[in-house]
Length: 222
Ligand SMILES: C[S@@+](CC[C@H](N)C(=O)[O-])C[C@H]1O[C@@H](n2cnc3c(N)ncnc32)[C@H](O)[C@@H]1O
Image (cartoon, rainbow, N blue to C red; front, side, top):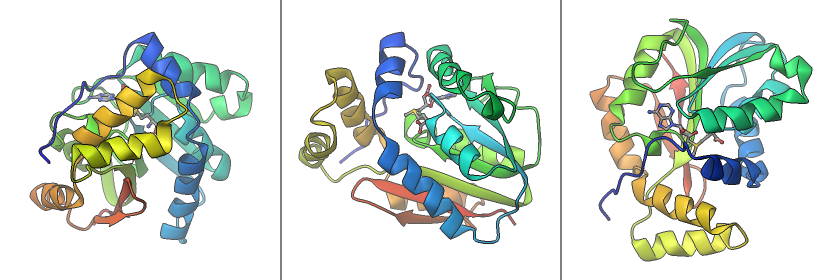
């Protein structure tokens, strides 16, 4: 099935609130575990760039599990960052370690060059041009930077995408079902991502399928 891009930013209040209220806890917490299993020798302290942080649920879970890490969490949607601010409000101590930044990629002024970890969940499939992510990693990584990206992958057919929406979003509001379906159609296949990495000279990163709809892209920058 051919890729059908979806709008990049999730910038309506309704869309952001529905996304922030959805229960992604199982998948999001599993990424924290997967990260520690993937990088058993990760540093105890790190400066982390989280690209397309949305309501910061993933950022907050990583921050809780890694108390020595500080985060620059970037998103182009003011509505999403409002949700992130709300989520951080009741967590004063995390607020000191998570800096939210509004910025559209490419073009956003991310303050550092060499982050220790670059993190991103469910962002790549939003980009009309995936090179935006790979160039951003090139620009903001240094030798040894850990990269940990998780995302959806595109199923083989619309029928399969509909079946995944029924299986995982049947109880969710219509707007969330619509966004999930559109995201599945907009996502890249593992083979497409492998090609993108080769083209971006990031073939030290690996692509693994980790569930019936998710994949991870991970590795250490050389
Ligand atoms: C599906 S959400 C994922 C949010 C969060 N990472 C999570 O896992 O819950 C994708 C986010 O990427 C943001 N986004 C998409 N394209 C962007 C771009 N070009 N620049 C900045 N943010 C972008 C959207 O606004 C949205 O908040």
